[in-house]
Image (cartoon, rainbow, N blue to C red):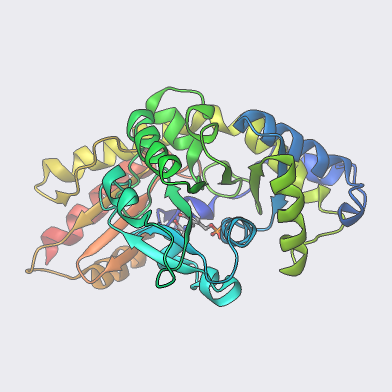
Length: 344
Ligand code: TLP
């Protein structure tokens, strides 16, 4: 049975071209700064995002942790969205590793509104943890994979600047955001102090993320990466796939968005409660009513038929499109979900 895996775009496998490039990669010891393939990936990533320097890290979670630890000291506060990946899904790393206090603000629409950022920018007072950093996420995963517009993004970043905060972008899927809005990625990445983006999601590389920022920031971040055990040696074998990800895979993400839109229309046409998103990308979030199977049960039944997706809660699930799933497979997955919903 052919498996159609819509759990995440993290399940993408490296392309044949990536595997060939990995086998042929020129390598050296990256802790000595001597891996030419890693160096090239860091330079190209920095250039693409409008920053001076880049750092290859093992994952999005490591990239975000390194950024937070580099920007903040123990006891500092970081303004985080209540639905953000950093707050919900990264094991509380910022507090466990950095002693950083999350200053939580509502971001259910995908971005923290400027007035909520401003409300955390309080005058210096012995009672308060000083707010040092704002973290934003684009596209925003739990807000339905929404691509926040360049205007809304800039307004929130400006509020942070006015309040004296630095800004870090969790841009795990920032190339999906730029594809959705049809703008250069620098519209988002160029206005923040640091950005983390993932090579290993829709861009298809097997491992890795990039952290970009000023040369001074990246040299301190390199130190934090080492402390976290992220100083790799002949990492060029991984970076070689990353180079193909940024050079060749960013241009095709709108195909994934088209497939997600198709899946969404199919389900809507059958009366399924698909969450509406102002600027959708490669995710479809669905809510289930009180009758019929709950999300874990529906997921089990569809898994038995070769269609994989994850329950986000008892009555909510997520479908993610990516280059490992064709339009025909998306149609088949949609039909399977509808049949299982009708069968109950
Ligand atoms: N997200 C994963 C899960 O952890 C939920 C997924 O399947 O979507 N930022 C954002 C916005 C993310 O969605 C993710 C991964 C990360 C950071 C972390 O990246 P990794 O998995 O490389 O540590």
